[in-house]
Image (cartoon, rainbow, N blue to C red; front, side, top):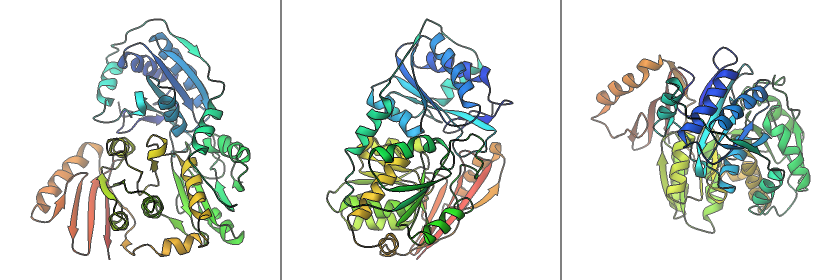
Length: 422
């Protein structure tokens, strides 16, 4: 089944993902984790999410689990619930940044460990496809104070010294429901656009990129905001804009945050193989340990935990924080950028301009069927073996003044190319 992907289960509703599929995923997940224990379930704003959640919970309960329904939340909040309450696992119903007709499921085990390719997804798929289900009676349980527990936990980790004027595009996604209430409770100054939860995503697709963030960039410039930020549909990515409206890649924000974190304590920083050399240069110059990972939540998170890293990130603007269990939480990332800006008289753009300069191409995508893309990468590796290569994720060729990376997409029928030079 094509809905089983590298990091999640995802497809078009109702043709590929529907209530019957959700029920089987619930029953299969219960069987996979041993038909016992407590799990949490959350959903995004998509029009199909509530119905899918009801069917999923029915399957989980028939598999003997105690289910905590958290309702409409962000994906990082789902992972937080699993770790904070010491649950057996959790499932988030979301298709992240995909168009409205898509939906899916992000699954994790205890301690928020992702179920992904090579990390249990194959076993779970086998249980579901072959209907190797085990049943026993389960039940539901409530967590009335979940949002308060989440807010109380993260706010203790942040110290914002002065009022920061920011503007956020909430993309009509899960953050629309959470962020305005949270910032109001924290007495933080923040303005919002596209802040009505709406599963049709009427303003733009829930994917913060150069195209969808154009209106935000214009408003940041015109309104003299200190920064802007755009969220994706399920709230695990935050794409930042500086005070000039310039969109900043995730690895560059990571370099800036690393500089902030490492000034007071030495530690590890994790970044994906596609990240600019600016991250490594900044981290090592400040006495930190630079750790390269495969692209993807499951792999970065694993390295974060293993190395007790301070912070981590990806080019795609997933930003991970050791102080909140290594989670890639867009809300927390926003608070930390506000903290950073409140501790300096310099503008966001001035801080970014102080970083070492590298020049990186946009990602170039080549269409390639899923069944061939990894074979193509294998042949390219053979061709490039005489050079200085790294095969952690695809093949990265290093030169004195730069590098290029060719890797297969884990989610699309594509091969990706990116290059960088001084």
